[in-house]
Image (cartoon, rainbow, N blue to C red; front, side, top):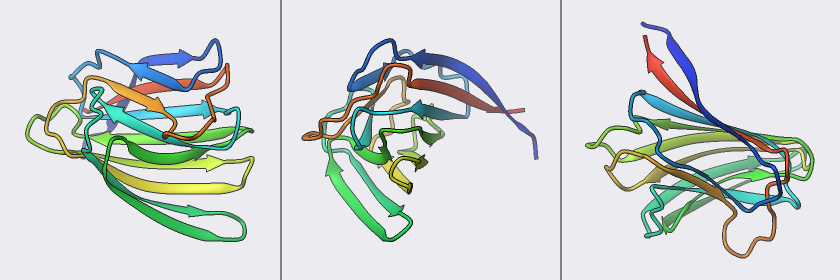
Length: 164
């Protein structure tokens, strides 16, 4: 089996606090994408993502969370964004992997996990974007009704993975 090579496509280190981060013009030359987010938020918040600025009810997923004292799960369907991981007020790390993102025949699937150190929360999840278009844009934001934002200094790094 060939080894996978990770190449940095783009890194954004936030100069100021914001509720949304966008990656445009994603090249179609890789097998998969991996987004790594490291930083903090202004308050404990959920995270969500959208592909190609699609705000239709085309996302569904399942999420599992565990803390030092409890476990929970939730699911979503026909949502206008993929509700994903949690992000905290002290150091958090989130990783999203988008398989076959450049395919125009497959629906897009994402596996995600994160560690939210301030609330001792671990989140695992899967999401799907019910669309066969190649992903050329990713937006990361907070679900409606939440007040949290990504704090200045939070770093978003998008990697392309290519089997070699």
